[in-house]
Length: 597
Image (tube, rainbow, N blue to C red; front, side, top):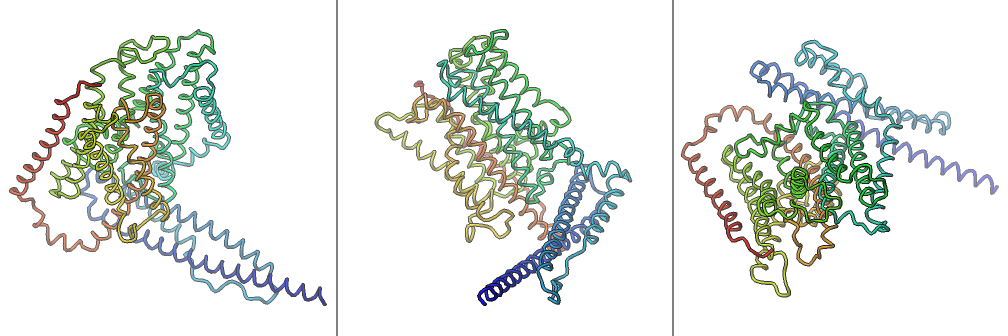
């Protein structure tokens, strides 16, 4: 009797478990069905809209508009392929789970058939086929091979980038990294500190650039995971160099070359390898390698070069999201620019032939580099972003957000210039002076200004509940980013200030602090970019929906959008006043330069 009762209990528990599994499977089916149905409906509606726009406006499109439209079609195709893969994967998983549940059910039990309709795989495939037919005739002139190459560019790369290839090179990179850390930081048997060498500035600058490349790989991975069309946001073409797999392969190769070069240079300085090759050859080769990868391949670097030229020629050049984003990246690379400027002086002056440079070379002691080049490189990225916002105000006549954003960079530029030409302000003695307190307050206010602008304007957060309505990332990512950005923004302020003393930090600590601050700022800027691009995507989605709803009213009010010449005149007056104030403050910082260094 006891065994029979126990068996009955086990059967009852098994039946309850099956009922829970059936209920969970039904809930998952319902949610997936609603998601796929809504996604397919939205994609079909967007395809219909693209078709109408193509039929009505195709003849009036210039080359840029045609490329932008083509990019939108390619992005829609990518989303449909992802939806098709998710649909097929869910159906396969669902069928396997149903098979397991049915195997445990007694004969005559009801099957799991009371479910909502899920769009068939043929419905998604027909939409993909329809889109490809439109693109074949509208953008590729019937060239099927060219269209397939552009719509499915990743297949060849995946075949090349095998698991063995990736594991071999990634493992090599990790071993080299541990080896470098051990020799340069932990092992002090030869009593030689690589961090005290002047040439370390070159390795520090290039190392931060490589870290930026890895952060960009991570950003691309996140954009692809959350289906954020970053290519259309940046107005880029779909090429192999924009694919995550290709970017990671390139990052691994560059990192391996960098670590091998650094290890050989350090071994040569310590005398661990025969002096068949002078030690200074290794940093020279690395510097030439940096110049090579920045220039070649020319076809892939041309677009980046044009964007850089538009950034540094502000306010004379056009300002789109791509130029503004790169301008913000430049403000986080001030330390890198200073290190590379010193490296250029170091090699072109011939000072690199010293066997063991310890800071007494002509470049380190150069007054021109210290008082002209370093201040310019520290202030110019902020000045470029200031000019970009001034141009946007001139084009749109909207004071907000462009004038407050411009003043944000103007305040940061003033802090940098006063710190550069008045080093005693950031090196307090036993008693803080009034001017030092004012400078400290200016740093804090400027940093908080930057932080609140990040959260409220660049990320669109800080509303009711702390977040915005339309979000693509999980909620915890937004809250974590707001907390992390608050602390790392102060590191950004430190990276703008030339490193001749950080108040209470002694010189031996600054040797290690400089690369840490530069690396942390690159990580913070990459985190900022994740949410900035995501917010730009959601903003464009909402704007496109509003534009569709208000097309008629906009056509009726075209006459009201004509710019007022009188108003344009006062805009120029305001711009002149703002620029004059910024220039005057900069001149005061330079002309009152302290003689104390």
